[in-house]
Image (cartoon, rainbow, N blue to C red):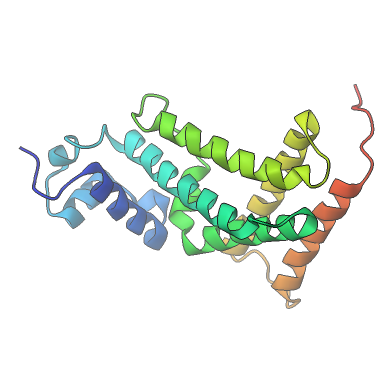
Amino acid sequence: MPRAGLSATHIVTEAAGIADTDGIEAVSLARLAGQLGVRVPSLYKHIDGLADLRTRLAVTGVRGLTEAVAAATVGRAGRDALLACCRAYRDYAHRHPGRYAAIQRPPDPHSPADQEYREHTDALLALVLTVLRGYDLDGDDAVHAARVLRSTLHGFVALEQLGGFGLPADLETSFDRAVDTIDAGLHAPRGKDTP
């Protein structure tokens, strides 16, 4: 019989705390069971193993990131929306580094949470595409721009989290200039794709 008060939601919340504090690699079923005061087999009454747990962590992460970006960009357009989107992304990654790391891994397609993960990633992409429509981008142009935006933001965040920016120049200025560069690139005329 499952332990009273133990649920998939409770397990994922505890795992998210471990991930945010000690890193995604610190999340194990043994550690989680120990913190929850149960044995590992008790977890299997609520989750389908570590791969499923990581998919559920990714759901928590992408849902939180989507909510942060939505709140930051509502009622904004153009560069203002872009800057708000970028700042919300970076802030979320700093406040929830373990959940953010979980988003970067491919989900387990066999996890019961896989469909929910896909729904939340679709919602996040829709928000980003809405921001990019302020630059008259749609179709493949919007997809290419979304990839550039994500890779730039993820690269900046990853380097920042690893302490990779050691020079004394102000980091906030660097971030704002990265956004300015993306903004300028989004305004640039788009040529035909080269073969």
